[in-house]
Image (cartoon, rainbow, N blue to C red; front, top):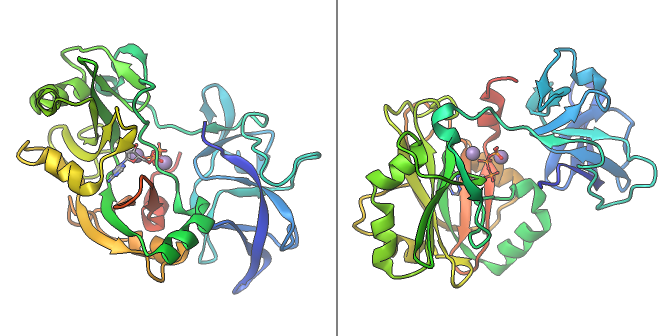
Length: 329
Ligand code: ATP
Ligand code: MN
Ligand code: MN
């Protein structure tokens, strides 16, 4: 489970020009607008990340519109702008007895908000997501401040791809068995399921069998009904972003992945190039994430995913411009 509510150290507090009741508080790489005087630099605060579904009792002031998620009345934390200052998530006083680093997500009844899944994507469960493949999660750069400093110092090179806003697909071949999964489930093959249709249309089973290895291809399914189809495509498409080597327990590097996919006729998430992180900060990376999508003119891109060329690490940088433009729920 994602750690959505954690006790963190306040590293900076800055005034907001023209605002005297509020200020901008920094915890790790996150900026959160809060009431003035609530927190002190060097002190602790309970930080709730964006996409938290916060029960009404914890933050009644956010719940003027009555909304429910999984039967819990509450509100989704979003990215907002207050007096020109970006604010992501929510700070609350540290509950009695909790200390820095504690994860209170479960205890406080906080859930990760997920948009409803359209019928053709839902599918029928064959089993849980297989334990021999890694789930397609990426950590946010705001939670990687210390790591970023190390990566900058080490001068590592990274593949930079556009993060597409669709739904995650995994197709695996393991010990002779081929399977297709959504983000969290191994799916039964049915005629109407979009994940399986794409796997069949693109002959992913043949591709994996021809490799003679135990591998999983992972990509983003975009299409009508998926996340509001921001790219305006007429039919579902698969854009590959990773290949996982099951036997070695690691992702293929970018060149290895490209070699494996060469000639297979698959689409790949837009590759924007390789770059080292010289001089990069959370702020500069967030700024560089803001741009139009390579898939559709005029559409704001969701963000970037950085994958290291020499180590099995990666992270995502979500565009605040994209987040500010998201539909409210
Ligand atoms: P949610 O907002 O529901 O958490 P998310 O897309 O932000 O969804 P994360 O795990 O936070 O999910 O980010 C990783 C996901 O991004 C992957 O599961 C994959 O579906 C998607 N993705 C899209 N484009 C890329 C890309 N170029 N490289 C890696 N992952 C990508
Ligand atoms: Mn996310
Ligand atoms: Mn996504």
